Image 1: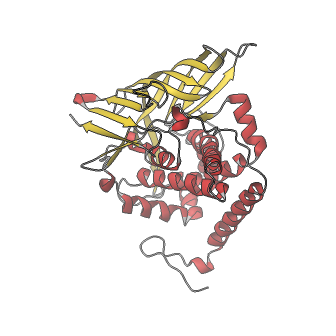
Image 2 (image 1 turned 90 degrees about the vertical axis):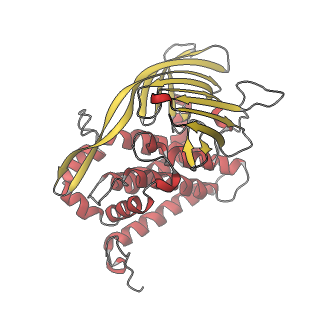
Image 3 (image 1 turned 30 degrees about the vertical axis):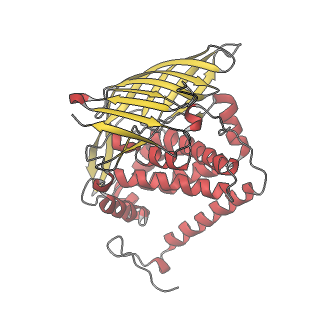
Length: 381
């Protein structure tokens, strides 16, 4: 194998780097495990081809946009696709994940294990492990399984491989946005996300037992919003990757504890109004702004400023039909989403959303289930 170097990234001789060989071996092992699971007929635990609600709006494009660009809600640079710092962000991500051990050495293995890997603290400044478990391991793992089921339902070959690639792609876009703030800094966050929790989530949820456990016991599913494009400039709006879990607390199963989470966390109650539909209420906090909470030995630790958030939700068979969310966030204060199937217009069941922010910001959008994502108009102020 000839010497390979990545200009401007790490200057690591990959042909003689044991870490690169371990990464390659791990990737091959992931593929082998996914292919082994794919040798059996795929059971569907999360995607059920429902023609309404968030299920009807779920597809590879919506997952890439909701998951990949979700962080735009808490970063104050332009939402224009052309203005996202792709080059800086990708450079910073690759420089960290291609030299993970040296970055962790700078950060400190004790801190890395206590703050990023194991739940050892409740201090919000240091509890970076929390989104690693919720958004990457459980949420990302479920998203990988659900999009694999989508590929399978639509007749695509090797659906598990396509699901894993789609999921890792949106995680990578997400990390680029997080790392696009400027000069390179050693950062262990993409190391924990891309090299540990994301692959582990994909592998775990490819086991039927794990998917069945979360589906049957916690009704885990995707409650993301209806992403849409606005033009001049090209921008993605109405973004929000969200997951839901419900745990019954009555013998009849009509009342459940609700946990709705993403870059936010809402706790509340869900009440069945009939055999198929539920109304849910909850309140919690959301990420409002990201800041650097610590700089030590040339490494950075990022934390978040939180703000209050509350929501009301209507779902049918755990497919979200409508949501009204109020949140003191950086970009939008009120967001109403009506998904396809929540109402009819001349035998058509479109989706509709409106977002209202500070200073007269307003977004209006339309979504049709036959399209991979919606279109919208945006009034900045």
